[in-house]
Length: 517
Image (cartoon, rainbow, N blue to C red; front, side):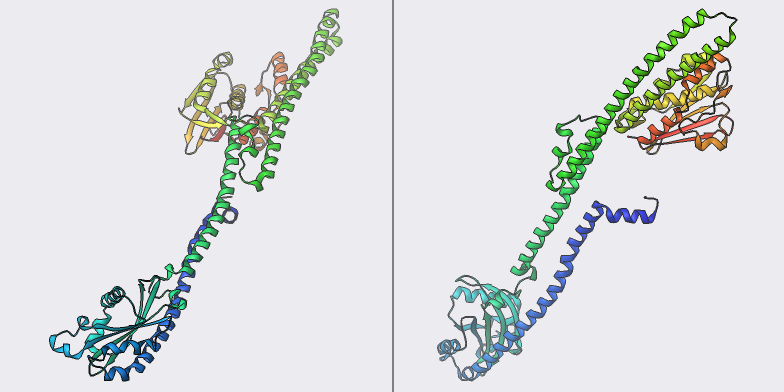
């Protein structure tokens, strides 16, 4: 699928991992995009609030201007009651002045401003804190230089009585006595709950929305991660079952490994499937053994019964002798078919639940290649092996032994006298490559696609088959054209591949590739 762009895209779309990654990106991107839009809207709201507060400060300043125009040093204590007429429970006013008489003392900046009155009355500590904030913002410096312009503010100050107030504007009033500054602040909920005087993200609305969003995202991610982890536990258990690391029941059960209630039905189905496969494999092995014993008993009786018949017949009775010979050949072939049927059933049972363990293929090939010394000497053949050490695959020792045995015996049976059978094992990237070559007649190119078919064989006298009659009878009873079929089926069961080809210099080459562990 990875080789085709469309298949790759379909895999990415349906993959739980890709969806989890996409969901993570969405969860990260959406707050950023939404926050930016909401922040812009909040900035507009702040501007409207400040403009409203500024207009209110200007109106109050214009209303105070006649009284402040008549004010002098003696009239300063009477300004408090006048200021309280314009204050209410949510609007607070404070009046500062920089007397014009201080101009000759070079106190034209913020140091020349003094608090005159506040409505409602506030503690001196609060007044000092507010004056300090105005100094830090440079508001009093700018007013002291020109005593003109309405300064919109957004300063959030704590109150000694608890809570906060927001300084929203400083309105200057220029009179003969000096430069007055009317500081307007608000404690109304509409102002306090807004983002005036603080970052937008610190507002209760944004923090509540962020908390809800985080909880929602955490729940969604927890659900996906829980399903993902549960599927990985299923995968780990499946690999352990295949490798034979876990037996039946207990921790070998998908139900016991499952932690997601909604997947309980799936886990139970997996357990039933595994139990069915195991029971099927056991039944096949029992049937193979029982059938072999059941068939071999009458075959043995027939073979033993032929012997006294042959002794009782005269040597001149050629017709009867030929009949007995045909019976013996048929019995031998029938015996071979019974053995073949047993091998087929056992191979099918092995492939139902093929065990996958770490197998040192280098050691296995070297050990098996050394076991053909006597057979090679009997056939007057030579063995040349080149085996790379440390090649490990995940498969089954028994099944790989069958594969190697069939490949080598196939090469030996087709090799001419004084020929050489070559066995090579090497690692090619992530694959182990086993190559078995012979110097025999090879295979008709038209038949190459068929050599892995069941019951297909090209053996004939002098071509994979002995030339003398007795040996031919024995060979016919053991060769049924299933060796290479078993090789391919076993290798493909472990995710490998088998390739057959004629050598350019003569002979035949079989190549087996398996993924390294």
